[in-house]
Each structure stands twice: as structure tokens, then as C-alpha cells.
Length: 150
Image (cartoon, rainbow, N blue to C red; front, side, top):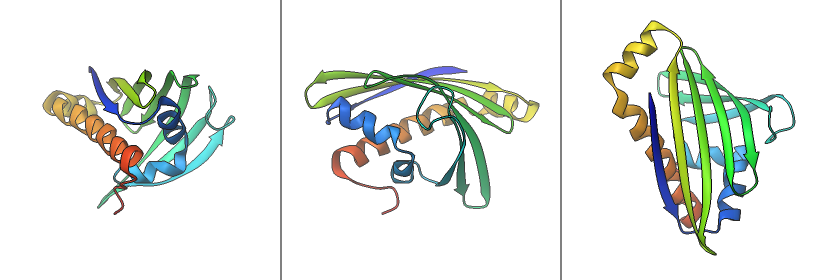
């Protein structure tokens, strides 16, 4: 399954990129995010791997994040691997003017087991809705310092 979501953020592209690049900020714009662990490579560089840990009530989940491409203030691409799913995410940043950024996020989800294949078939809108929520929560954090922890 492939889809694209985008959002306009009223902050300079440099600020948006800086906030996105810092794992310690993820707790402020990703509901359920608990912690991250460095696995390999130099953090934030191509090839670097991090384990991202989430807690959604009764359900704990871990993802392995791999940076696949990075061009400062232009793009930041990742692969995310979890039990049953491989997600390719390409993030593009465009400076509309000195204080406005367009963030375009292209996502592809590839199920690696039967259960996830069924989930993608039955609930495709859920994935897109969650991606858009992350972008909206990031916008609120970047523009107004509003954290999902509050």
C-alpha cells in the first residue's frame, strides 16, 4: 500500500528539519512513543539504526529505524521494520518562504506476514490517518510547543 500525506508548517525549514532529526523530540509528537536505543552507525546519518519503542496501552511495539537517505533541509528517508511490516518512508521538505515549510511524506507499507496483509486490506485508511496525525502533532509541536504529553 502506498500513499502520500503533506502539511504546511509555519516555521522555517531549518527549524523543522532540526526538530525532526532529534529523537528526543519524538515523545512530543508521536503518541505512545516511549524510548529509543542506538543500534549502529552514527545517529542521523545514512545507514544508522535505532530501535524505537512504543506503548499503546496494553500493546507494546518496537520498530527498527534505518536512515536510508538524508540531505539537510531537503529530505530525510527511513525504513521501519517491525514484526510483520516493512515501511518505507520518504520525507521531503520544501521552503515555501523564510517562515513556511511544506512537509511531504510518501509512505509504502509492505506486510511480511499474513496477519498484517489482512490488516492492510481491511483497514487501509487507518495507516494514512495515523501518518497525518503524526504530521499534525509535529506541526503543533514545532509551531506552538504543544506536546502530546500535555
